[in-house]
Length: 161
Image (tube, rainbow, N blue to C red; front, side, top):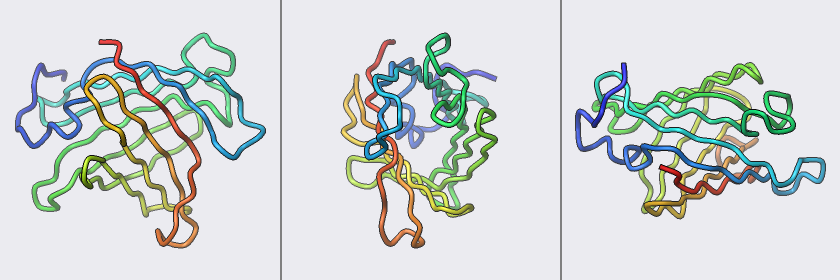
């Protein structure tokens, strides 16, 4: 199931994240949200190097609130590049909150934007400020079919391995 390298160079948009990361999670604008929440993130090649799987654990296993709703999420994403679409297809599975969402992702300048229109509200997840050992992930929602976006979550990822 696991692979050591990508099957195609076009997969490097997400391939550059392969490895383990520490997360600092915040929920701007929500005074009831916990603060100082740490998490773990792991990216790896799967399916013969044709896809990237990532595992998100927030809060980190063993930390207060780990695995408890509404702020915790322990989930996984499978991402692959769809040649016909010319974009990434991505599916998020999150048992803690009972969510499954499909996204289409594209590189936009120096960022990666993933948009899900298969539920209400629409979601946009952005990988921003991407550097070899750091990036910022932003989770946004839209109640007006992607005309405007509201920031819901922000995570700063720092590479461990």
